[in-house]
Length: 225
Image (cartoon, rainbow, N blue to C red; front, side, top):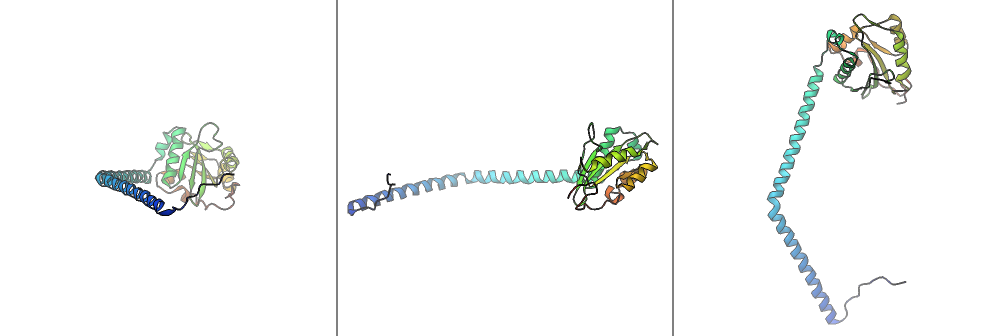
């Protein structure tokens, strides 16, 4: 097996002198390289400083623009009020979007999921401490009533399909007495026309209106925390 390369110490005055010349030449080249780099930086520093300043200005401008946009959105959501007459004039899709916007106003991260195969959930929202809420929206003609079958469907899918901590049926109409009684017994919340007015027009947050409890280690709908 071949031995590795090893540096041999100079022997004799001639080799020592040669090594010294090589070392001095290397140091000289290194010094010249440093001088060139320093000179280049000295010549370029105004341009580099300008670029850095522009980058800082751009970052500050962008941050202020984002912050201003967030403040506008927050102010718009905080001021959101929807009347019962406006709800009555909506179609199903607009009703679902309106409920999503109200949840966002109340501090939830909410999204509309209604449509074919929604598994009894039209809007889903998440909020720290409170957990996840599933909203089933039932837009009806004025005076229309929502029956118990809706409550059954929401109860059956809130946990297994959506991992929800809270489930609520919201309508611009009314609920039958059986539906309200069944919902109260099986922890499915409900918002009828009067509660909807208090939520959407008066500005009472939904979780305050319904007195939703904090998310527990074992959800009422079978979801582990």
